[in-house]
Length: 439
Image 1 (cartoon, rainbow, N blue to C red):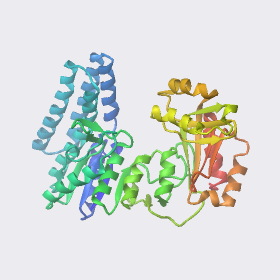
Image 2 (cartoon, one colour):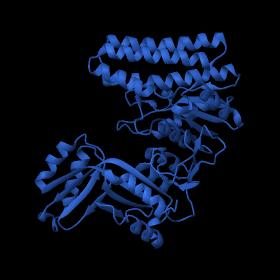
Image 3 (tube, rainbow, N blue to C red):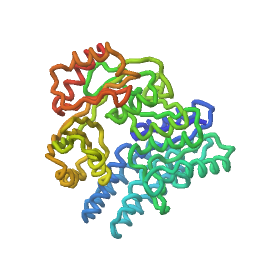
Image 4 (cartoon, rainbow, N blue to C red):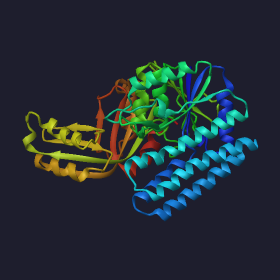
């Protein structure tokens, strides 16, 4: 059995949803199909939630009405059968009645989660109706019946595996299952979501739970490219990556896949394929346990980085100093991306300003604290890239004129990262493409 995940752009128009159905029914292998909300829906639901949180019910109502109109137009082009259109209208009516009811009740975090869940619930129900119209035998499998997160808001893989296995065994006569990405239930039994990585995360967790033959992530890009195609000309998709390489690229800015989506598949040795819904015959990118080729394969950029430097002569031979610094970031649940140390200073980077003022205040007793905002991390990734002397020479020769704030080298065999001013990001991506990849 395999897993096929389709993102918002892949189901964002009726004709795209028709195409997804073709891809799903192309092979005879049993499969679980994971769908995101229609493109634009989650953003609209976030706006509705924010307006309600700010007490602006009139604006929230306008967003609800606009979104409902969009769905009714979508149905007209999705389905031909009058009977199935009536079913679709009933589905839309049910979900938008809920959204209108919440205008009259007090806003809460739990209610926010319910609002955000509506997109995936509607997209899967509409897709199920279309499969019914083209007479494809399948089962709509509610994610809320098996997707669980624990008290730390992390996926409970053991529970997911147990619940999902029982459901699949109960419906062993079915070959195609359709379910929602992103949404789940928390330890209190409330509707919640996976936040980071959303539907991709769901697909990877399901693939791990059922030990799938493959986890296919279908988007509107033909695989993971060796550079950012929005900024750099002449990029190309990478045919194969190891899980470690893909995790480095995803963490340091490659947008096609979130880093959290790597570990469940890697844990269960399930290959992941990044494929293009618009070009289904393209090879895309396969991510698997091992890839033999060595050297630089791709570059990724992460924006909005804050560099923090703590300087103090008291650091010299100070036992436990680093631990105390890290405890500040742990207290505010703020991950550190890069770190370098010297005898009298620590420089590190974070990508969130949520608790920056509190972090600075707690670091100040340790020494002088300097902050540099609007930085970017540029990461060059490849199997054993740090051991390839010719690659290192090319990298440093190419970027010699770029102002470098920090370098991370040796922490991973697969990654060399540079912290630079954000204004130099585009230039650095361009010159790496020419000087390192020869493109």
